[in-house]
Amino acid sequence: MYERILLPLDLSSPESQTKAAETAVTLAKGFSARVYPMTVIPDYGLSRVIGAYFPIGFEEMAETDARNALSDFVAQEIPADLLGTRFVAHGTIYQEILAVADQVGADLIVMASHRPELQHYLLGPNAARVVRHAKCSVFIARRDEEPVGRGDTTAATH
Image 1 (spheres, rainbow, N blue to C red):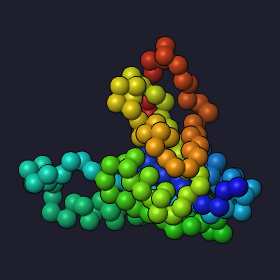
Image 2 (image 1 turned 120 degrees about the vertical axis):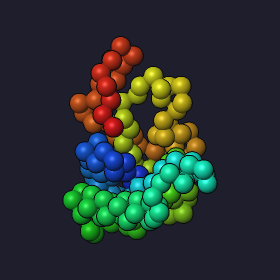
Image 3 (image 1 turned 120 degrees about the horizontal axis):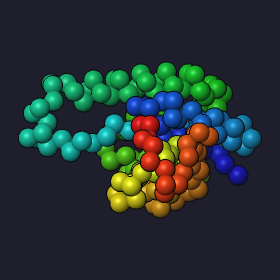
Image 4 (image 1 turned 90 degrees about the vertical axis):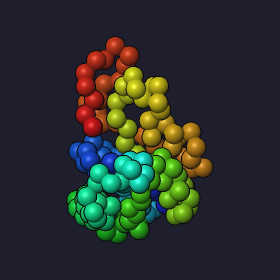
């Protein structure tokens, strides 16, 4: 049923990604599929004006850090026999996830989602955009301790 599972990861909060990784691995084992982990370095709107405030070599350092963090996470969470190609993308998060999904021919995307906050209802989180625009099935994995509800006022962990 599934052969290529894309696993987008927010490595700024690796502890929130563990459930998604566990879910992807379980599904990959059950379907003899490969897991394609990825992370996205967000595009902070680096125009020439804003880019002048970042140190020289910032993008290269960010990409190196992202590759290292992805390698570390993958080594801990994804068995080598299930591992597909790793990706580090740069740009708008949901657009890059969709582009890599198309590139690898993903038939499932497994991703974590932070607990919704008011700003997400107004702006739309990356997970919701991926669900809305993906050409394949999308599985959203929430951590067990994350309550969901309109009345919840606790701060989200990012």
